[in-house]
Amino acid sequence: MQDRLQQLRERALADLAGVHDTAELEGWRVAFLGKKGPLTEILKELGRLPAEERPVIGQAANRVKVEMEAALERREQELKSAELQRALEAERIDVTLPGRSAALGLLHPTTQIVNRIVSIFTSMGYQAVEGPEVELDYYNFEALNIPPEHPAREMWDTFYVRQGEEGPDVLLRTHTSPMQARVMEKTVPPIRVVVPGRCYRYEAQDASHESMFYQIEGLAVDEGITMADLKGTLTTFAKRLYGPDVRVRFRCDYFPFVEPGAEMSVSCVICKGAGCRVCKGTGWLELMGAGMVHPKVLEGVGYDPDRFTGFAFGMGPERIAMVRYGIDDIRLFYGNDLRFLQQFA
Image 1 (cartoon, rainbow, N blue to C red):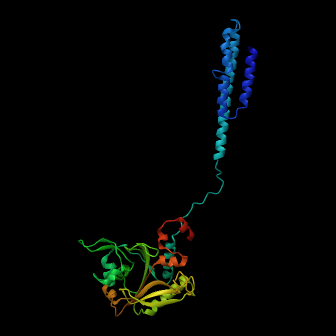
Image 2 (image 1 turned 180 degrees about the horizontal axis):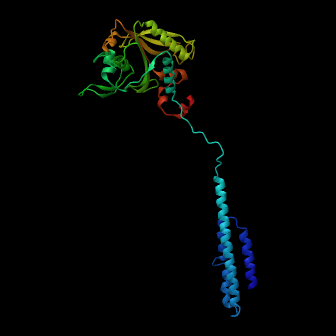
Image 3 (image 1 turned 135 degrees about the horizontal axis):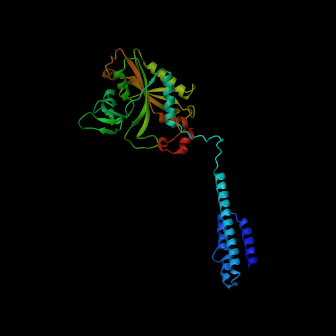
């Protein structure tokens, strides 16, 4: 019996040394110290031994059991410590490595074009100003020579915030032109301003129309301003925007708040005037509407039209961006599709 206990002890400790994780350790415990293990079987046989041998064998068996349990506990601590160390090594962070740069957002293509246009005009002495997007009917229409029932109002499909109730009509501005009157009311000429901002029109959305879009208005008022100043300013702007080789064309057009009015086009920057899909074969791209400020608009803000003259212009930066980047659908600007937006990084 003594020999069996000694052999069991040596085999158990040898097997325990070969255990490599806590799962194997539990298997070892069941195999050697469990209810069906060899040590338990030896303890069950004590009753069949002579009375004088039982205490000796019993004490020997208990010593082996205590030694095996102590060895089990030590091995368990060793394995848990090793597993913890491996986990720490796997998760270790080298604080001496350079940090990862945060991903920075980029300016929207419309914002890039707006900033470019505004920077050109500010370099020519213009001041950038902004106005309210929720506007009074007076400034959006009446102050711009478009009284109630005037047929020109049909040119703008309008979102009204308040209409036909007590108080003045309120709407989402249909253009940035209301700032013409607002600036002139508070300013003594000379005036040189550009007005970027969002506008709103209640119309069907398609490849070239959106219910919300950007517009940039320009206004210059002083003594002795003529159509030549208008053409020179806008020609300079076009060459700064598209390059010195671009050609400019002015044709008569109608806008209620200017007289005379003109539509300004530039030679197609894609085909250089030869004709292509972008310019629809004409060789020209319409850039903006412009004209000399109507005398009635000047009178409405208290200016003497015999003393002061001026010119105004308005353009859509999305249209300029579409031409510049070859974009064929204005709705792409507002689809929040990163595949589209990341092209303009």
